Length: 233
Picture 1 (cartoon, rainbow, N blue to C red):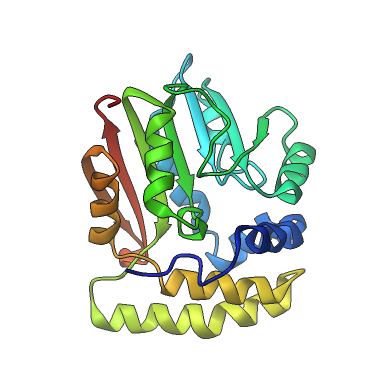
Picture 2 (cartoon, one colour; picture 1 turned 120 degrees about the horizontal axis):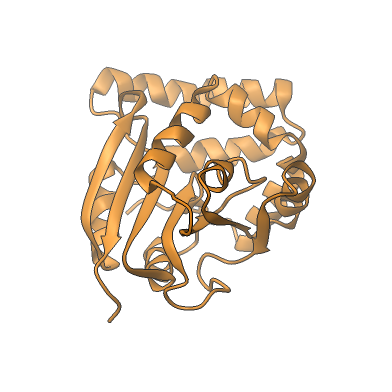
């Protein structure tokens, strides 16, 4: 099994994200060559937020990923464990609700949300199965989980090209644009050590999610997984 945290303690990861909060959205745009907007649109399409729905966006960072749900009329909660990210988010998007929270012990009641989502944050959690189970706990029966995360291209040449990007291109871009380039070395390493599409789907099913599917983006370098909570035990 891949080591999602590469031995970093949660406090270290939180400090890392605090350090890059100020330029995080810029770096996302640079690192993905602007593709993150299209990926967020895919997530919004799968979540299908509507007026009256309650949507939890975990690992929301500065809230850019939460805005599509709020614009659709849902009651969106942007949750993150980085105080730096939350502070930056509140300055940028004062219209959103930001809540500090740990993926392994979410500060919400059981069945509090109609949909839950996490984008590029699950691989930074110490215990992925526990986080998936906790997300299920706070989701209503019939509610949906949507995960956007780095993944594994199917074709060997594409896997090699993706590795070159994460190992060589990402660190160089970080040196040019990031306020803390060392943080992006960790993010590149965690992307390379992350689960394949099938492995993540298996973790989701083991955590009690049903009807698990995924959609490859960028030739499989990124994938959107979805699952349904059929009911609480």
